[in-house]
Amino acid sequence: MSDTAAGLLTVLALVVVLGVTHVPLGDYMARVYSATRHWRVERVLYRVCRIDPDADQTWATYALSVLGFSLASVLFLFGLQRLQHLLPLSLGYTAVEPHLAWNTAASFVTNTNWQNYSGESTMGYLVQMAGLAVQNFASAAVGMAVVVALVRGFARSRTNRVGNFWVDLVRGCFRILLPLAVVATILLIGAGVVQNLSDTHTVSTLAGQTQHLPGGAIASQEAIKELGTNGGGPYNANSAHPFESPNAFTNLLEIVLLLLIPFALPRTFGKMLGDKRQGWAILSVMAVIFASMLALVTTFEAKHSGTALQAAGAAMEGKEVRFGVPSSALFANATTLTSTGAVDSMHDSFTPLGGGVPILNMMFGEIAPGGTGSGLYGILVLAVITVFVAGLMVGRTPEYLGKKIRAREVKFAALYILTTPAVVLIGTGVAMSIPSARASMENAGPHGLSEVLYAFTSAGNNNGSAFAGLTGNTDFYNIALGMAMLIGRFLPMLFVLGLAGSLAAQKPVPATDGTLPTHRPLFVTMLVGVVVIVVALTYFPALALGPLAEGITR
Image (cartoon, rainbow, N blue to C red; front, side):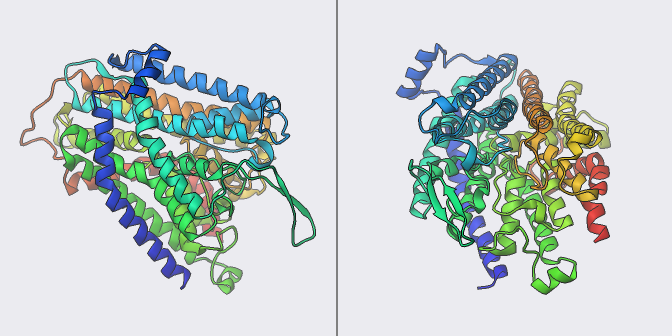
């Protein structure tokens, strides 16, 4: 079977699985976050932590809970890495260097999972399981909790309460992520993914050298790594490593896992609002953007330029040769349109324009479908901007889902949209102005700029994938990218929660003949246009100097 045919079948299988799971999973998550009863084990946990699970929080208290929990998580993970050499199952590895430990702690707590280290030569089993894998659950659940608070803001009226963060966090972890991760782990083990705690094995290579291969609880970490749109791999080669993804089935399964929850959340949104049409509209926008970007990256990688590439029949450098260009393009598109960052091919080796598509995917804000929670609240903020623009066109106060979009709501939405571009562009500019930071670039010219732009885009948008040509394990990049991850994650969350509180305090506005229907194709088209225009106007100069310049000159 040709690579093209295999790629088409992979896409078809992906669409079928996501289509079959969309309604039941979306409805289940709506029931989880709307339930009034607590499980017995949850009540025990609340009692131990002295949490009142029936207390509703204001948006400010909810935000403080998010920040407090995340700060404690950063400190715990940092300390665990620094004490690694004293812990069991360390495999003899030393304590992680302070700047790298800081970067890694910020990375995993923010759901970024950027890795300035090789997992198989840096982290022992205990740190991987008790530190990194735990944060894969927690950071994903935090994102889901924030979007649920925003949905409650739309659904509730005349109140300053948006829910209980601790309840949302616990339910996201134990009722949604954990059961799905168990099922995924079993499937991955059955398909050949490694799951053990064995010592490191020394093997002889074909070149006559020796190589040290650790095992580890790979399948269980792989499951939540993709399911929570995290992306951090136990091995440096990530999902291209045969221990993480040994065959075409596991490659497809991992793509399914990283898209499963984000594509089901629009259904949850519509269900909690009591208007499923709104969920279908948001899902349509996500699907249109996803399909369009997949077509672009696949075309750029297939219609390559250059005598050598044409003679080879494909731009195969850095690709997952087991599955071909189409499957590599599909994985790259899925991982950068979510906040996953897992890779089964090296994006730095994509053609210039093909490599520009993953950068653009992240610049969209990873909203198609985005990360667990972060994708949906990102596109809902853009929906608020869309109805505001539409209101300006007809000269009336805009409304969305029965709530007026006033100056306060627009300010929260505008601040959300401006935060990440500021982090990305300022960070890239500072890096390009510092000689020691430029020295980390393996390539000069437009491609070198693309490497740095990709790094800050990935960090600021909490993606985690990278152009491999940049040496990130330096003091500057460990500190700067760590700051970019934290600002890019939590500042937008504060604006989302502020928007949720502002919406919840309003009284519902009845629809009139002048109200823009937000479940019809016209609104879907307008929302897609706003996404494209906002990104194009913000990032086009940087893209023109990087991947576009390189693509035109080749």
